[in-house]
Image 1 (cartoon, rainbow, N blue to C red):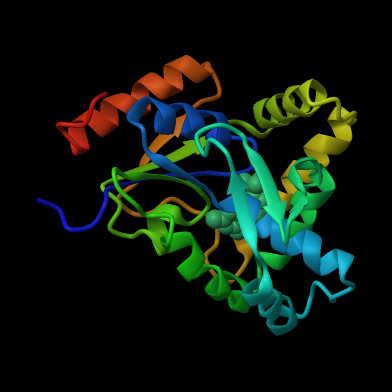
Image 2: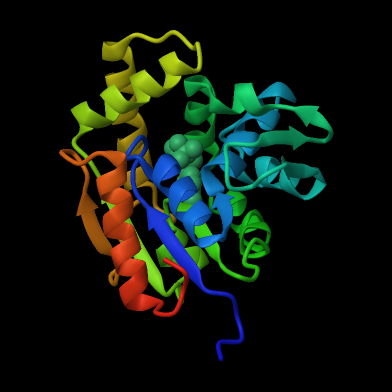
Amino acid sequence: MELTPPVIAIDGPSASGKGSISRKVAAALGFHLLDSGALYRIVGLVASRRGVALDKGPLVARLVEGLRIEFEGDDKSEGIIRVDGEDMTREIRLESTGELASQVAAHPEVRQALVRLQRSFRKWPGLLADGRDMGSVIFPDAQVKVYLTASPEERARRRYKQLKEKGISVNLAALSAEIAERDYRDRTRSVSPLRPAADAVELDTTDLNIEQVVEQVMALVEEKLPGLPT
Ligand code: DC
C-alpha cells in the first residue's frame, strides 16, 4: 500500500492541449486537479495590479504568502478562481496574463514560494498535476509523467480557437509570435526551464485530437498505475 496519493504529471509548452487533456483524465479517474499555470497567472496578475516590479523576484515572491487562492466548485472542470474573495477567472485566462505569468515564473524566489502550495494538492485518491515542471521538480516521484508537445503552428491555432470560444478576440499572427516568445523564455530560464523529465513519456499531439491523446494517456496510466478505475 502506497503511503502517499499517486500523481500523474502532465507537462508541456503553452497551448499543447495540457489543460483539456488534464481535466478529462482527472475526471475519468476521479482525481484532484492542479492547474499550476493558474497559480503563476494569479501571481503575475496580482503583482502587476499592485504595481510590484515584475523583475524583482523577492518582492513578487513575498506576495504569495498573503494570497487567499480558492479554486471553487468542481475542481475537475474549469471552475471559478477567486483570489482574496474576488472572482478573477476571466482575467486569469487572458493572453496578457499568460505573459505576466511567464515573467514572474522565471524567478527562483517565486517558484520556491509556490512549491508547498502545489504539493498540498496531492490528496487521495490521487492528483493530476498540469504544468511545466510537475514531473521534474514538484512531483519527481510521480508514477506517471507525460510531456505533451505539438508544433508551434498547431498550438497557436488551438489557443486561437480556445480564446475565440470564450469571446476573447485575438489576432492569429500576434498570438503565434507571443507563443514563440513565451516558449523561448520558459525554455531558457535558468531555474526549472521547460523540458521533459528524464523519465517522462513524450507525446507529440500535432496530428491527434483530444480524445486520441486522452486514450494514450489513459493507456499509460493503466500500465503504470494498475488497479485504478480506467
Ligand atoms: O500553462 P499556462 O499557460 O497557464 O502557464 C502560464 C505561464 O506560467 C507559462 O508561460 C509558464 C509559467 N508556468 C511555469 O513556469 N511553471 C508551471 N508549472 C506552470 C506555468
